[in-house]
Image (tube, rainbow, N blue to C red; front, side, top):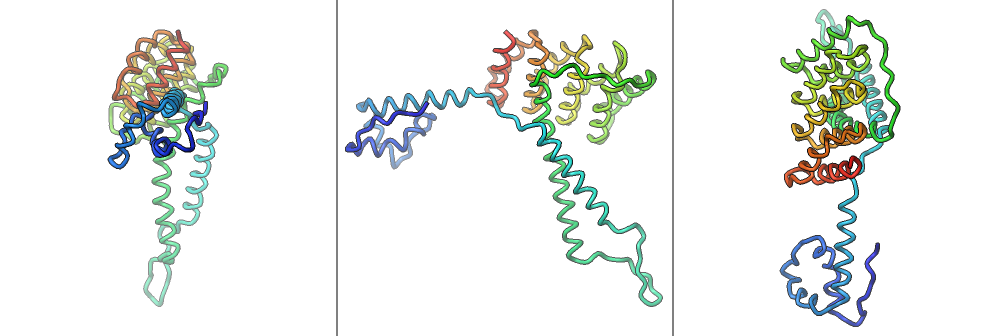
Length: 293
């Protein structure tokens, strides 16, 4: 819907006020230099009509669900990151490399240009790794949008599942690198081979208590893959109010909608009415309510 131009080209007041109508429609006050133009609005039907159309347009735009980048972007980014790491490893000098000058062994030093490039690459990798974790979290929800068939559970030795559950529980309770916890969470669905597996309970605990939002996102995805377990649905509903990270909140909402978990409606209603919650999350909660009721 585009605002209709009803203004008279000969009306200088309309021409002066019209550039400020989008700000007024967005709830912004006129700046000091344009305050005098406000007196024109009550007596101008054309300006009033365009202002009303702009407000409707902005409300429609705000109601649109938040767009999530395609899942292929995550895979391409991780592949690029792996290639950069491999290049950096290949360029690193072998440990203990020395150069001889006379009788004195000297440690081989990289050329200044190479050292500077390597330092820049290492800094980029640190930044890229952080961005990758956030990107992974932001795009996990797309796995839930297509109504994929239930994931096939790989057959693994039964004795591995209790060990994995123990590792998961221990990783949450003691200091451990987030990458190690991510690895354990990613391995969990393939190791679960029987109903009541303790790894599911460990994943539920990870989703609720892990301090790293990316680990919680991975736990949410793992639980979705294990959705045949009757503990998963209620646990996801209970976990929603505990989350404060927007990526985790949106992914949980999409998971609950994909599972048709109607017990989540009260939680979604509460989340959609909290002003401190990010607007994109509130919109996702409102959309989820509409799909579940």
